[in-house]
Image (tube, rainbow, N blue to C red; front, side, top):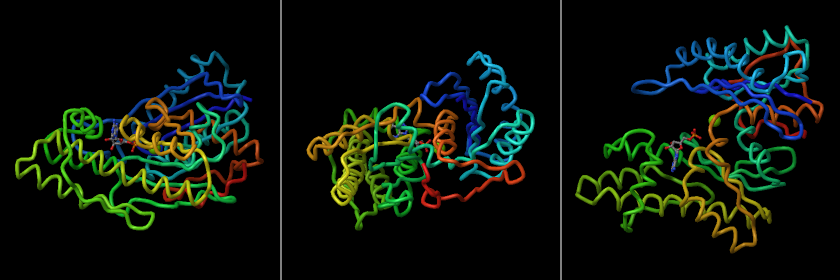
Length: 324
Ligand code: AMP
Ligand code: MG
C-alpha cells in the first residue's frame, strides 16, 4: 500500500510517499523562514499554498510513481496554526477529489511520537517529547496517550532559546548552548521538579542574572544543560518506574542534544531499559511521520469521508483515541 502524505501545521510544508513496510520513497520538504522574528501565520499559509503542488510533483518524480498508483492520503489535521492547516486541508480536498481514494486525518503530535517506529522496533515506550514550546513525558495507557509530566511554563527548547537570545547567541539557541557547554564548568542553578512536572522559567532568569554579574557564558551553558536535563531525566525515570515499561523514546528538536541523550541513556542502562533518540532528520516537522501514522490508522479502520474533511487547531495528544 502506498500512502501520500501532507504536512503543513506550522513553518514546514512537506509531501512524502511511504509504504506499509516503512519504505520511504519520497520525502520533500520546504520550510518557511523569516529574516527576523517569528512565524507570520498568513505568510506561512501562502508559502504552503504555493509549495504543495510543486512538492507533490517532486515527490511523485522521486518515488517514480504515478498519482493513480497511490492508495491512501494522510494529512496533518492539527494541532497547528489555523491558516496553515486550512491550506493543508484545501490541498488534501483537491487531491482526494482528483484521486477518489481514502483519506486519513493525523494528529501531528501523535505522529511525532510514532515516528520512532520508522527507525526502531520500539513497542510500548515512555516518550520524552522535548520540543521548542513544549516538553512532555508521555505514556500510552489503554487507548490514550497520557501526559504523565510536563513543563509548567516554557519548554526546554524555548528555555535554551530564550537564554541564548538574552546573552547574544542568536537563534536557535539549543545547538549553540550545546557547543559552548563543552568548555564550561558547573555553577549552581535552581533545580525545580514538582511531582512529575518541571519548571524552567526561574532557571533561565537566574542564568541571565549570573551572566550580567560576569559568570562566563560557557559555564552557564554547561550548567543549564546539566541542571535542566537532570530534571527531565529524573521525571522520565519516575515514569519508567511507575509504568514498569522498559523503553524510552526521545523525540522533538532537543533530541539532537548529545548530552541529553547521554543522560537518558545512562539512566536507562541502570534500569535495564532501552533508549532510542529520533535523529535530527526525522525529529523536525516532515510528512514521512504523517504517512506512517496514517497507514497505522487506516489499517485499524480509520478514514474520513470527503464531506467530513476538516481541521482541528487545538487537537491535544490525549484527545486521540488510539485504535491501532
Ligand atoms: P522543535 O520545536 O521540535 O522543532 O525543536 C526546536 C527546538 O530544538 C529549538 O528550541 C532548538 O533550540 C532546539 N534544539 C535544536 N538542536 C538542539 C541541540 N543540539 N541542543 C538543544 N536544543 C536543540
Ligand atoms: Mg512538530
